[in-house]
Amino acid sequence: QVQLVESGGGLVQPRGSLRLSCAASGSICSIYAMGWYRQAPGAPGNQPELVAVMPSSGSTNYADSVKGRFTISRDNAKNTVYLPMNSLNPEDTAVYYCLTSARVGVGIRPRDYWGQGTQVTVSS
Image (tube, rainbow, N blue to C red; front, top):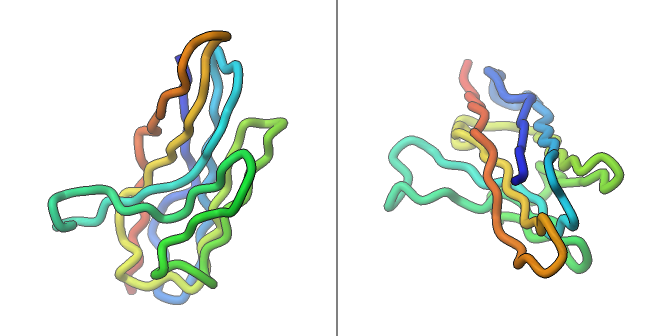
């Protein structure tokens, strides 16, 4: 199994910054994509929204609403993904979930693992 531990959420004023971190641990054979989703109160269909996802190779994918403000990065040696968030606004208020696609053994298909979520509140 894979465990994800998120940190860095909290309360911040508009135009402020926060940095989320997510460390993966467990019986990890390979990690593929790592990224972040968020779920805001009253989101349509109550579905999480993609924020940013970084594959093991290829282009990073960002939500249009965060481009230029959020920059995802990862440290493969530490199995950790980061999300510095700048110029935050109240519309960024949500529970942020870490996601990783990982394989836990040879011959075992990769699957997605989710963190427990960390609250980000942007308010004056």
